Amino acid sequence: MFQISQSQLTLPEQSLPIAARVDVLVCGGGVAGIAAAVTAARAGAKTLLIERAGFLGGTATGSAMGLIVVPASALSGFPREFFTRLAGEQGAGLGEVVPWDIEAYKLTAMDMLLESGADVLLYTVVSQPLVRERRIEGIIVDNKSGRQAILAKVVIDTTGDGDVAARAGLDFVKGREQDGAMRPATVMGRIGNVDLRRFKAYIDAHPEDFSRDDGRRVVDLEQGIVRIDGFFSIVEKAKRTGLMSAATPVNYLRFSGVNLPEHADRALLICNSTRVYGIDGTDAADITRAEIEGRKQLRDILRACRELLPGFEHCFLVDTSAYLGIRETRRIKGRYTLSYADVAAGRRFADSVAVMTSVDYGTAEVHGPDHGHEGSAGDEWARKLALKLMRFEFPLACMLPENFSNLVIAGRCASVSHEVDKFSRNMAPTGLMGQAAGAFAATMAGDPGVDWNHPPLAAVRARLEREGVQVSLPPGAPHRAIDKESALD
Image (cartoon, rainbow, N blue to C red; front, side, top):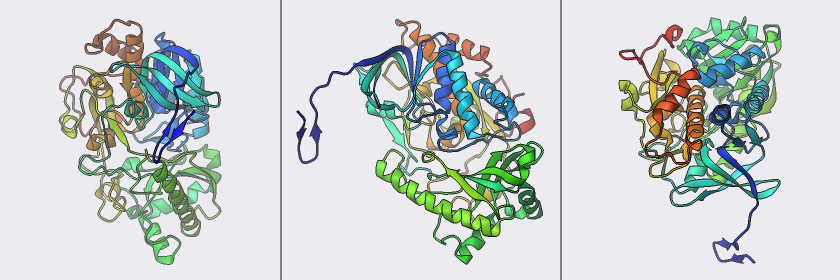
């Protein structure tokens, strides 16, 4: 019988069925989780991926963030393999940026997962880690079958928010170190029946109204690729005329998408423009409030687009993101925390498991936590900066909790500073993290006696290199101000 006090409910001890025993359990089916599960299974590990939704992709599909912001030529490893296949199925564009169709992404991700030999359990959420003596032995999950236990030799936390690690009692940092403030949340909308030719004609005629960066000013009608930031004057006019509230913290519009050329007169674009500040993505009340506010903002944005933006006169809202787009929450404290000083200096690491490529934002605050700053007249990143690429090594120690075994962290919850998060949280880097986590987990699961304090780095790095991952920067190679055309040279 349960007992209720003023503030707590006490449940009796429970006996739970063991649903599975696996070598590698991946918690979270987003970009990092897919890469981790496929890599571990291909390495011969009995692998199970659990995902809270009824599909894979996480932020890439459920949150409708359908874009990688570096050129296709800069992709390597699993991200390169995945998007090359997706493009072959007409689900992605491989250009200066890499946009995708989110429904095609769901199908391709599931195909690759099952082909690898991994198993998957959808509609399943992490409830409680099973921890004994600073070692994780599995997870209690909840789904339509009830509460069950899944036992594993190695668990990979790719939940984005670090749910497994946090519930296991590991230390973490939330948001910006000095005040805990986190990047804004977004409700995405897919807008249909857009005339891309009229849209492009307006952009070409008003270059001053858009970001100066080539990677944020892409409207390629031949390839059907769109990634555009700007329309500053459109937003200002919408606020002056009452189409949008003057208090709405939206200062510019951002669209992306990939459409067949023959669909240019009725294109589908993703709108990534709503911004909800002061949100903790690990707080149920906060994310509820953000969903409500984000949809209100999106409604106003759509009204303004119909009235003011050429090509959008007859547009309509196809759908909104299945769940809230969260940019930043917990970062689990690992054996090492990657700092901006490391990235800026091109520091080399003996345990590097991937060379990651990112837009070089420098010290600019990207999607910063400060209310309404993004896209404002004072935001140099959004309005003025033309950015090149940078590369940096990512050490395995950022994915391993200190004094804890059998748990690997991959994705935006890995151990980096807030300043590095703007480079590492993007989808190409998190995909490489997932691939490294899968390779490492399979190696560790294959040898139960291996010492987690002295892991077999050479074997893991060699496996990743065979899979097309560059694990170290070449001696003397530049890491900053890389031209997009030579990103992998």
